Length: 183
Length: 183
Image 1 (spheres, each protein chain N blue to C red):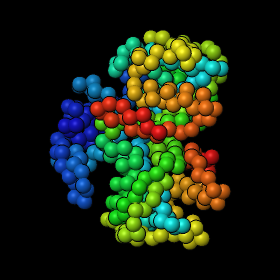
Image 2 (cartoon, rainbow over the protein chains, first blue to last red):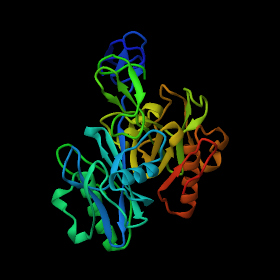
Image 3 (tube, each protein chain N blue to C red):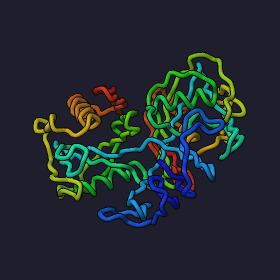
């Protein structure tokens, strides 16, 4: 950020009075421009014993597989966002179910919020940001080609939980240096 | 938003090519300025059979009671944010525990993420944004003076769950028109 979005003047990165962290503050109108982490919402769409994955047609991780997920929009709930992303990326309609995983990614200032979901029909196809969509059985999941640690961890928990007959919430943090599987 | 924070030129609210929603787009450098929901993180700090509440010294809801909570900062996890807010608002140190509630507030473009937490000691006091901090037994909670529907719902669930001996995750949505208790 170099200019004030309110008045167009230059901004200075400094700690405002009464605050404890540096912010972008307008040199003219004194507007403080806070910057906050973004939420990525998504789901694991299930169809019988299979799950729907999407192969990415965009960076980062072009060509890798992921669950449908993306940035939540203003004015929508996390569940609505997860359903919208599934429609956009896989042209698939889902009934969004329980919250399943919350991952903190502090070095990217992101929080992933992932739900379990049920595909309403088996009609799906690649959206504009997707090369290919496919239903996978557990033994078919391309573990070495999963786009993100959040998704890989979540899918591992999903199959562990499913084999034990009980799905529980998973909360974890992905550190810059490597992967922490969370709980 | 009236000006581009990247180059200072004017912006136009329009749907960018390939997008489906209007965004602020710079008339000069074409930067797209996305705006996304913000995350409020907080916790219910427990001390034996009591919980710590804070009476707000700021708007909105000046003078009303709430749990320690506030906007998450870039670079921190939801748990770190909940602990930091508790330190800032109540000068209290907590061990942040399980995720307890996630509330969508789509008309404010906010998502509340609240944890259970344990006070590490009984040394606390009002922070800069707080008039008063106090430990409350269940029968002492000032239900008519709770600042936000999210907090009121979460505390009701907390006491219901505690009486049944099992705490479970609650996910809900607060609509503009009124309150929905969630699940």
